[in-house]
Length: 126
Image (tube, rainbow, N blue to C red):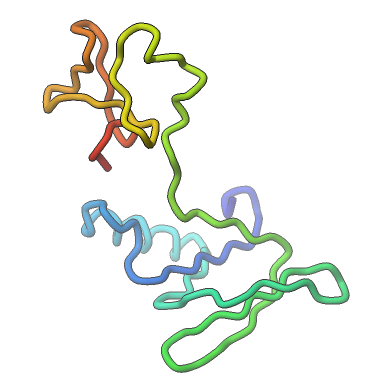
């Protein structure tokens, strides 16, 4: 978004890209900061309300302080689920966990010999 000319602020509760290699995550964060992305670190959102101009007023806690900031748009990136339901994988015999993630072995093989799954669509993987 920043590369498209939009002012971007990212609020991070604890560490950037939790669950990923932190050396790489920190390099990504440094690059983004050098490109003009603003980071609000160690912050937890409390509420989002609309002001009279229709902008989002975000109240957040940072340490002991409560701080307000105003934004045009707020996007929550708080994780996601596997969007596999419409693939009908069960019909071909691929085992799916109750959360929709594909069950695959250490070799990425699913319950079908010639079908593999990689990444965070797999149960127990980042």
